[in-house]
Length: 295
Image (cartoon, rainbow, N blue to C red; front, side, top):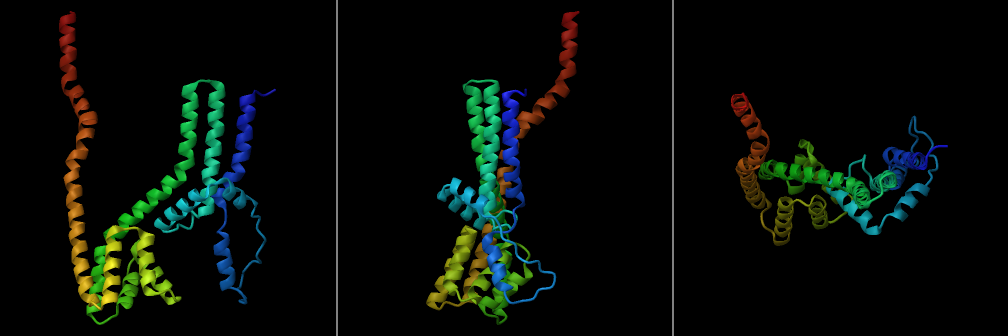
């Protein structure tokens, strides 16, 4: 008969693999499927397969086991990360539960093999880290996206300034910048124009753009645009001033990173390079001295 830890490990893997497969390979969200169905209703699309009913037991179970605050936090992080299609919120919720369950099962095996406070603390720590891994990955994606937006903002404002001074309106300049751009800022501009096109007020669309991206420089620019629209200030002057300010901030950030390089190099230099250098230079002399005194 197999030992109890082996049976427990097999049971944990048997329960975790189906949930992990669903979390990683699940199809699009129900909201996206409903939106696609509404858009294609009444259209005879060639090669379209008939819709099949989907089981909603696993999504409901995952939502029931996850606090509402965690789901809201994941939704906010997903918005900051641009809502990547491969990481929908239901899949993230399921991934958190699956990773935590697998880590808890493996931690239980470790604790049963060597009982004691250290093993128990290690199992609890690994389980907690596994539970927050999806949030950390999503937060990292959001940070990279915010940095890309902040880096592209100055050039985009320059393009919009040239377009406005050439006679285009502000929204037409936004459309041109979004059409010519390739980064996340261009995607956000296009989405903002789509929100305005479907009937959302311009002020709310601009504020939603600042809320989604959570980039301080872009939020400051949106606030200036909203105030200019409210008080009748020339939008060309606002764009020119904001573009100059963004270029100055980008230069200051580059100078700040350049000044941080010597401080960041100190620790690798002391811990990695200098010991190796001492061994290479002083090692033969130490060996000769030891051989001389030993003989």
